[in-house]
Image 1 (tube, rainbow, N blue to C red):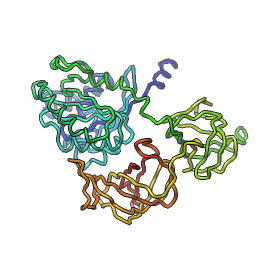
Image 2: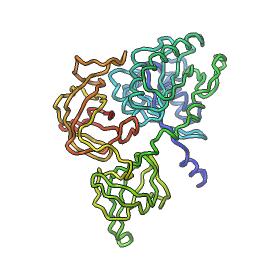
Image 3: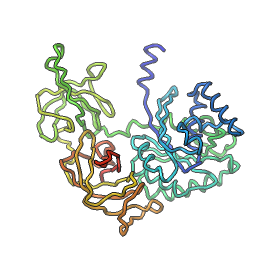
Image 4: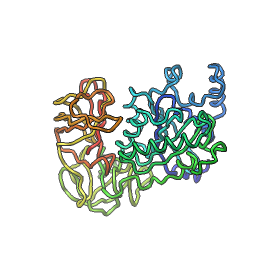
Length: 424
């Protein structure tokens, strides 16, 4: 590969997407089909799963075996953990998070979906919109995933009937009208046979829309990031103190919002001191502007006392600074959430502790009603709570910035992540 084509590959836009659906809706088969039809797997990989399928007495090549890597997943024919897969077409690079369909693995779906630009929700054409479909759509809307593609799968098992597809589309739209979903599209597919996955289906001439792969390659994701509110959480202070870089002092981290340029006037939180950006460095050298989700080192004109967990922002555009925070929380642990419970909390690059002051309500995922008389929050429950942190956080609402608007709660005794929170 020449340097030019290598750089072309590196410069390609990256789309992160997640798959969700109930058990046996065909998520792993769909991903296997996409990898196979887009020529993203090697012949020997294909041969290995062809042989494995034959040994299991299956009539067809089981493409789901490409993604279900754990032995327990293969034996039970289910996905347990989030499986990440990487592939590229001439137009884009992709990271897929294949997430489990079982109710008890909802927390794994939250993990896989938290950084996604797009979610594919699979619906079995024979079963229609079921409880898990609603649960996944609700989580996708809660996590503010900008784009949703609803794939009505197994159309081959309902004779590619347009009426079945239209009814499912109508049912889903009715439920989704209560959710905050910005962009939603529907595609009838057969992951097993490949209809409308990479190639247009000859069995569904009534469907005039795009194939799934075409949508993934062309959907516009450039405006999904917040390029207005400048947010740079400091992760690390770089002081090489070598002869070559004797006076170098830079602040490394990943840009969480906005566009930063040398010469910009900035403010440092929590001190409130202002200064200007002297230069922005990357591994390749200095750059003229930086935007999310780039990892960079910012150098400032004045020497200010800055440490990990501080944030560089614009003077006239400051996040909320506070210790009392309202969250929607997805609970991820068998031990229930405790009122007055103390937890470690992580927000961008800042670590602190917090206390849960109040559980306001939990959400009934089937009808989106608030349950106010049952405040017990167990594994996979979603609830609204209020917390108080031991030190001020610099945060935005989750709907304006998914990075500065999210936190995780950690059990201090076991060091397990017990909750993922979206700031309201």
